[in-house]
Length: 116
Image 1 (cartoon, rainbow, N blue to C red):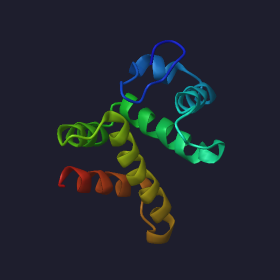
Image 2: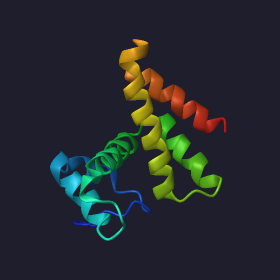
Image 3: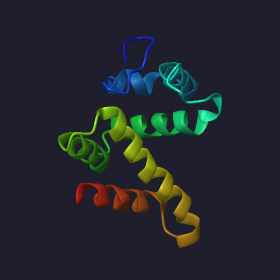
Image 4: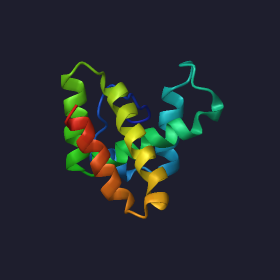
């Protein structure tokens, strides 16, 4: 991220990222996907990017390790963000049904990534 742009292939500066209002983070991610084939209904996709970048910028150790692991196996950083985003959505979707804390389920999903 350089001032007014976001590129999922490069980690944004954590302090700079977290200092931005959430709406600005979303705008940056949305703009980075212009022309990428992600439709305007891709708001869920953009929100997931923002959520994962937020976890990483806040220093969530398991998320950071999962991203490093994915990249060490050949995934691009952008693909790693998507995979962690899938784990996040799965955990938050399952939490009400399983009556377990979202964060616990997210860490379990990330642990599965790390063991793959």
